[in-house]
Image (spheres, rainbow, N blue to C red):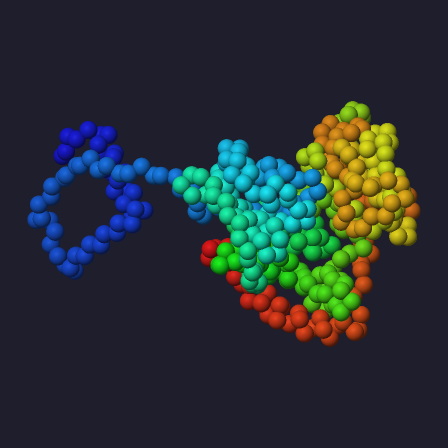
Length: 427
């Protein structure tokens, strides 16, 4: 028996256990009925030096992030939203000073970046004009900037995946850009409440536009079609634009998926307090009814109008703090309380469209922390919006149905192919 120190034996065992992962595979063969008892045995212990694992700059944990440029946006703010580490952001901004286009970002356009899980920025692309691309890439630890004229090649991309936790976690794993994931959630917002309906194992498929230059992704385009299987039930959305230029997402039988009312004033937040006739108020320290839904979200999170409306009230009102009340068609109205500030142009009498930002989450009024207090009112009486059957929109007219059928059939075939496939697991 060897008398080698235990630490050396441990190192050898660790080395042997690690070999298969380093690409070394050994195969041994012994003929049947061979006698092995007389074979001499020798125990050999050696100290095997293994190279230390080196971190990589890029790999399986890179994510493509796409951010739309808003009015007043700065390059530093966009990098922060993309999760770029402070050191990389500082070095990138220094390199970006060479570009006039990066100094004057155009609202409405998008930037695309590849960022590692640790916040390293690998690639940054900004289409400053339809024929001008600004790209910044990492090389030998430094950022190099290039501006060039481009002609973009349109492609149709197909992705699918399964929900294991959050929606954005699953779409990241499937390499679906955040913009496309948001469009999918918006398309299905009338049928699926992503706050409470999402289940582990739900399956999604998306087909969307992407634009390339010399084989490199420059920007993503519109979501063309999607399927979301939620709790075993399939929901499908197909993009269609009619001859008059009206567009939107429709079900396979031509029903408009844009509901008269969205199910939620924010796409991805957590319900912190539901509609109740008896709830202990955390500020007043007493039991009282809670005639609305509270959505927990960070201060500054955008709040959207759930339907087309006219602003009935915009200002401060008691325990609501900063409050917006919207008057919708017929007997319906909605209220949005505890806002930190109001959206641009939100004042009494102004018109707003469904999905428009009317304010931002805050903690004004009687609130212990940042959240949105949302009320749905029918003839002035608060009702539980999660329990109401809300009005729907109208289907395509007869003139557009034939055109829609011709464009929808190939998309439905593609979705059918994706249904039994988890493309995220194949990446």
